[in-house]
Amino acid sequence: MTLRITTQTMAASATRQLAAAQARLADAQDTATSLRRITRPSDDPAGAAQAMRVRAEVAANAQYGRNIDNGTAWLTGVDAALGDATRFLDSARDAVQQGLNAARTPADRIALADVIDGLRADLLGRANATYLGRSLFAGTSDQPAFVDGNPPTFTGVAGDAVHRRFGENQSVRVDADGAAIFGTGPTSVFATLDAISAELRAGGITASRLDDLDSARATLRTARADAGARLTTLEAAKDANQAAKVALESDRAALEDVDLGTAVLDLQVQQTSYQAALAVTAKTLQPTLMDFLR
Image (cartoon, rainbow, N blue to C red):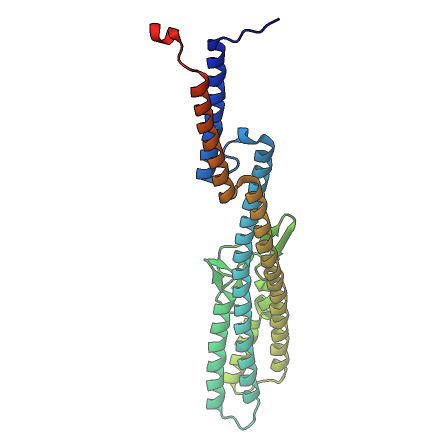
């Protein structure tokens, strides 16, 4: 049986081949222009699903990075405030030692009491240290940690904490408990400084005040060491976050992006293929007598 191929059949086949070549050329042009392997989900459904998952991980990792930066700023503020507070108490201890010297005159002790009052005010200021308007020592409260009084009153949320998440199941506390560090009521460090000032103005001071200050200084040093350990945790998390960022970007690029050289080469191949198809079609579909008789 002889199969008869008509001119109309050849024309239809050539048209389909040209359309397919043109579509491949258009895809190659889109890829070379956008440098994206996947420009729509239909390009690669499986790859698009993987790319969406990786993009979600990239977004989560970026948020963790912002949390780490914010937490680092909080803990840096806490560390600075506790360092200042420790120096204030060191100065207060020196003043007490001078006040215990029997050679000091009443005027000298009054001057030392003024120094203690100034250190108390400075200490209260550092106890109310803030970052972006939030108290570093008041827990989740948006109010100052301490309101001045005799002694100052703790107005934060005792035992509450501010945390920052830096991993899927990882978080760290970024504030400090002002009530535990500075004390509350008559046992607070502020009450101790008030008592020292009063005793100096009265003309005498007991050596036990040195022990009170040493205890307060030890509490501050412990709190500062704890803040430093948490800051170290965030520094390590920062390094891990940056490494994850690089790895995730590499995964995303492998799924979505194309190499510029590869895209240009493919475009040239598709252009050559399309031009060749046009030339072959032109030679194959020669004009017939019917074309001239129309």
